[in-house]
Length: 114
Image 1 (cartoon, rainbow, N blue to C red):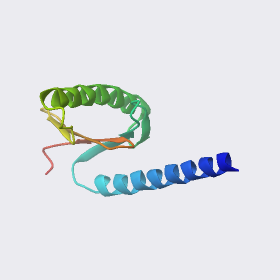
Image 2: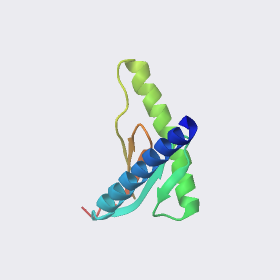
Image 3: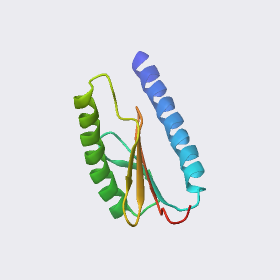
C-alpha cells in the first residue's frame, strides 16, 4: 500500500534528480576549459563525476568541508543570509561550488582557456 507508493515516489524523484544532474553535466562539460565536474551528496559523497574516483573523493571531501565553513561564516555574519555560490581561483585552477538543496556541484576549470 502506502509504503510501496512512498518508495515509488521517492524513486521517481531520485531518477528525476539523476537526469537533471546528467543534463547539467553535459551542459557544463561542453564549455571550454572545464577539466572536471563532480556532483556530491550533502554528506560529501560523489554521486557523479568525470574525474577518477581518487580525485573525485578528494575534491568532494575538501570542497564540502570548505563550503560548510563558508556557509557558516556567511550565516554568522547575517543569520538571514545563505551561501549560494563559492568561487576559488588558484594559479592553476578555478573551482566553483554551487550548493543545491539536493546535491552540491563542483566545477574545476583551467582559467587560462577562456
